[in-house]
Figure 1: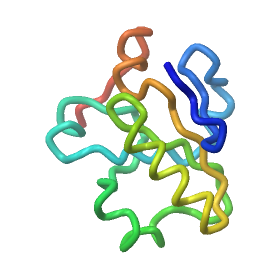
Figure 2: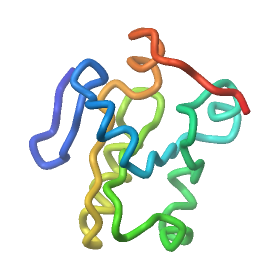
Figure 3: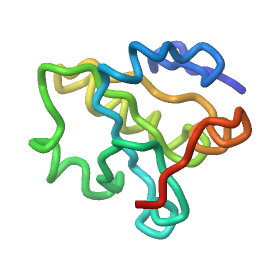
Figure 4: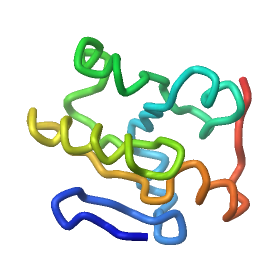
Length: 107
């Protein structure tokens, strides 16, 4: 998949478990997408709400942004980095996550 050099990204196959454990995982999909399954421990803030709810995203923690395939999370990554946060896009999103056999939570 195309990776924009201006958006820090990681693919699921290269996602370090340490990064995953230490990062604030931010899922920016819509509520119905979230309900169908998400990364355990992720926080759900739809992309359209992110600017108003950015205070819920820790300023002192790396943020892993997730959506369905990487487009919306790429926008979230760009936004967060532009305001001084350290954010990384999960390239391929939940689609790549599930295809790789990673666990999905519906709670």
